Image (cartoon, rainbow, N blue to C red):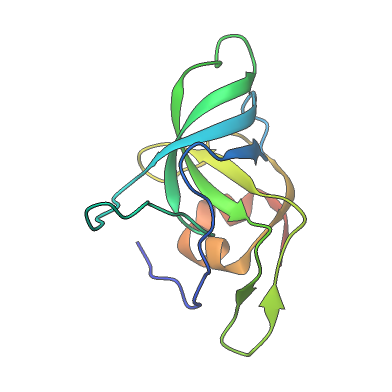
Length: 132
């Protein structure tokens, strides 16, 4: 997996509820853990743009409610800084469902995604409407 080119301020913690931005059938996700997180004892894990998280489906299709899924964070409300000095923030927190290989589960993404996610997950950016 390619590293991020920016310093992303991470603000999403476990039990945060985020919007699912694709047409996979899920609408609201609850973060229950981070994938490949190696932390320090008593430190709370945090996620930001480009992080892979393990979620539980809270709202959506009746078949999907309560299932564990893997998602990548595509938008966050907290601003983060890019290397050229610009600061980017979005109006909501959103994620896109992916499978174990990093391929998207849905066939289209409704909103915009960050450029950092497009660099790390090229298949996700291929189905995105807008890359900012």
